[in-house]
Amino acid sequence: MGHSQAEKAKTHEKVLKLAAAQIREHGIDALGVAELMKDAGLTHGGFYVHFPSRDVLIAEALERALQSGPLANLGAGKSPSAFVRGYLSPEHRDGPASGCAISALSGEIRNSTPKTREILTKHLKERFQIMTEKLGGTEGSREEALTAMSTMVGALTLARAVDDEQLSDEILRAARRTLIEAIEGEASKPRRRKRVY
Image 1: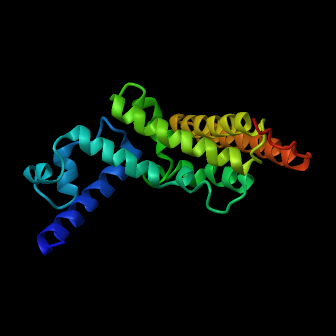
Image 2 (image 1 turned 45 degrees about the horizontal axis):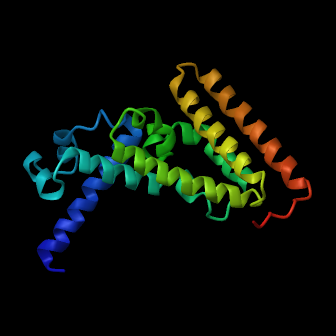
Image 3 (image 1 turned 45 degrees about the vertical axis):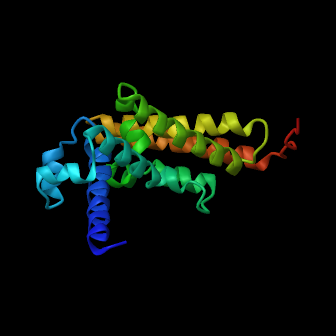
């Protein structure tokens, strides 16, 4: 790769990283091209050197945002209970720019482009599969995984939405306690062998 191509790739990466953080923190609709390029130390006109359209930027930024954050690291060695504790923590709630893109953006993606829905769906399917395996990979694990992840994302979304910190903490605590009790209760039961069809 030549020097100018390497510089272009580096700049593209910088813009993408900023865009991913901004959509997690403020949402897709709030992402303005001019402001983003200014934050990256570039001119507005330089945007089209890197992206043919805002929709392409959004799709790439969403992909990047979903590749980082807590749910992207679901399979990285933590037990399901430890993962739930971290996900449903005040620290995660208070750090949306580096937090879960699924919680931050799924409501907005519902009314977005088919491409963004496709990207979110692909990532959710991967995370559901990882959580299913972490919960034992049995017949019931899939349903447990869907329930746990839906509860986590919903609780975090609500905890971020309310303007009452005490209620927000209560939402996180209740969801965290319920999920951990369910996960640890299931872990203590003997597992049925996975049926092979």
